[in-house]
Image 1 (cartoon, rainbow, N blue to C red):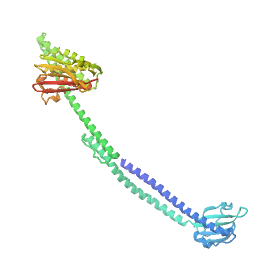
Image 2 (image 1 turned 60 degrees about the vertical axis):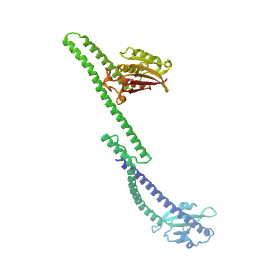
Image 3 (image 1 turned 30 degrees about the horizontal axis):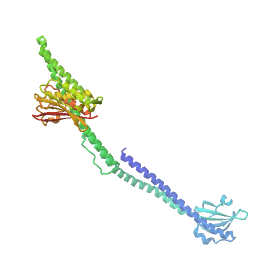
Image 4 (image 1 turned 180 degrees about the horizontal axis):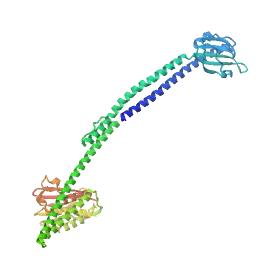
Length: 450
């Protein structure tokens, strides 16, 4: 059963209930009002008759017969005066014999329904000695009641049909935007096109809110799907590049081992190549594990540390790295008092990656490490006088395994700058590169002051 049909049946049921209650109330109010007016008329007529009777005079019943169908003055056994068209002698109610005013429904000898009012007149002893009875025909009431009983069900069915049709039309218009949302979701599910959107109904009601929320959700899903697709592509490239980088040292190691097996002796050069490639492969695996931890969301344990001694220690360790250029440091004394919130080993690793890259890609000239305050943080810059990086390659140098220029890829894994940028990010800092062809490159590592 569709929601539209359930909604229509619900509306129709409510309309049917309302019509039944209305018809019952109308029928009851009509009968009550009619009988109320008849009773008032009978009471007033009987009072007019009782006035002369109480004075021992016979009233002129013909004078007041226009206000009732039948009137009579009687004792328990005989009629004193009578006027009207009713046939037969009505029974005297027991309550009237006891001196109480009564209303009863009677039927005369011609089977005509009457409303009978009996007024007992009491003597000095407190007992009734004569009775005034006035009756009014209920034929009109019964006729109208039968007509209402015939018309009201027909009217109820008519209004129920009209209400059901109206409910179907209203529910169709009300559910149309919801159906458009369902159709859009179905179209997206079948076509997997997250660029589809539900047309805005232009209303500020619940349906408009639903459409807006659904479209916002599609925007988020589209963005998430795009990021997921990009992540999958990057992961595939990462695996392919890692496989390629690992294949090269493994091929060299395997080749040298085969050579020594054939030669039947240990060749010092082959052993040196095996050791060099094993170290390179070990370093690559270590860097891959670091990036895997980064992808898993691993965070280092942060604590306040003095940045000055950390930079000085990294520069001292960098002196031992292979290099053929001059190495300078420009570290102000105030740097020793600057505190940052971070992980000492990881910050040192960033600095060593930047300095080692500068040594590796600067065939002649110098490498300089300088530091100073910048805004609400501190920046450490590593500058070289190397060949520089082309403008089209500069935005990609922090990507994993990216090779900007084979001339600047001397034995590296292509992962160092990616690791350095990730470490800078988890410390709330930034890592940027500025370069000019023929003049050199400057990497700026900025950290917020604790």
